[in-house]
Image (cartoon, rainbow, N blue to C red; front, side, top):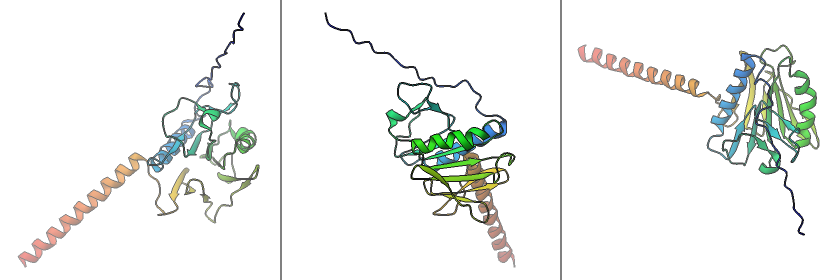
Length: 219
């Protein structure tokens, strides 16, 4: 009699049942960072996501982590419901955590140890309230099997080699500046406002020049 091989299907949940963020401020900051980085990498094979379950041990649905924001280069930027490390065959290149009162211990102890083991090349922490981290922006780069702190400049800004961006805290938010042009990354709303302001300025300049020409014609 032939033996029957039983295949057990493993369920990997899409939610850990926990809230997205401790406060509106932390959630909004997380969403904003994801949008900025998605817009920056939109023309490249780079996946940007956040608050998504990342499973790192095949067959064990208890082995997962939920990065606030993460960037994976050289993978298809398609939408995913969960991220399975053994399927994607690529750990995040960069992880950013928006630290709060509830997440401080995990963000500073448990998560960096795990991310280093998974091979995450750069790990950043940002505290938008500036109550739980000093300084509120901290960066780490993987050297060998451990993280080494990335030294900030005189303004507290940190350069991410993996992102090609300079990270800087301004007005309680994390700003991203391109290393090649120095331009600050803008959300879709900020870009629309900047374009509208530029258009109004151009229209005002045309009106001024026309008025100047009329004055010259009348003189």
